[in-house]
Image (cartoon, rainbow, N blue to C red; front, side, top):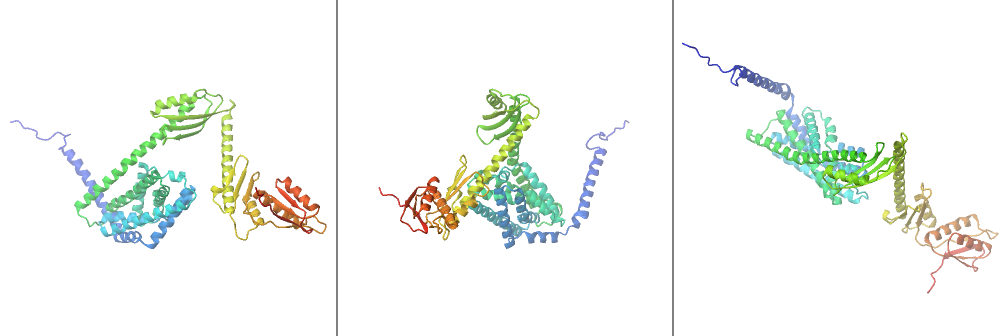
Length: 518
């Protein structure tokens, strides 16, 4: 009788070896789960943690005030393009608390608490956006700065930043290390996107509005859902059934996927633009000799065609370089391009390109400082004149600045001249003129010898200034040589003068000439 071996192959799935491996893995997972419950979850005071989060996530007067102050600081920092001011707004923002509260209320199934957190978050966000919009409407600065533009194109990396920050924040909250929340507030930057939303609303820039709103929603949902997951891992007791918990897990995962898809597409666009920028720079360099250097490169991907402006420092001018670059980039990028290349010839000496680049940078810096000085002059002149900056006339070529002053009660010719001098302070080489409103001219006293006294000289100079600013003819009435000398002085200054020898002997009476009848 022949015996038969009925055992399965040693390498089959049903082999004793396979069963042993599966059993070992399951046992390791069970031990890990037991250790997690006993060594980690058991050490968390869940009730105290919930109460601490609940107390910070409600709608209070303190929460509303700090939200609005944070929003105001954030939008001012964005308008000024000041990262330090924006970071200060992040530190003040209390929005993290209701978002964390939403995540933990989801985890434990407390619907009432969830509604209160969402209410606080909604009211705080709306108030922040409206407050920022009001500040932007009242501000003369309404341009899209670098700080604003940086928050209009969220991508997948922003979601990852929010995810990692939320993990750290939820862990710190559960373990009672609330000081870490400060770093989380800076990393996720909840308030600046809301401020940019307010900027977009005030300026009707819906591209800025939509991009910033997407970034805020991304940070908000990522933090809330991550807090929910962390609370589940740390065993926070849930009032939901197993079926409800599984449904909640599916909703969270689906939401992450919905957020990730558009952000990934945006990231793909950003990656394409970065690669295209490198290719454009390389193509321009290849169009010139070896010692040439691309000094400045500006690419407008948002335009159609793509606008490319470049400055090249080269020892030899390259003919048809612009056409060659356009043709190559059209094939390479498969998109229409508009190329404009400015060539600047430098010598072949070593370091000539670097020197030219340095001189160009210095010239641009000098031009920038000059533009800032002119802008400051216009603002000062508008301030002393009591008008808007748009009412100030600036002639950069002839270095002149003029403005018509509004009438100020009690302010005479001397006061307006002093205001003009203050506006012109620090602007050497500029002809700054403040045209005051019409008013009576002062008489000019003479000394006993019939000449101008010290006070008379001061008033004569004041009348000369007033006539030069108003461009009106002057009538001088008096007697003696002082009258003719003063008339000759004003005539040389370009002032139309009419004299009358019928005035008193101790002074020269001044006045405005009446318009001649036709």
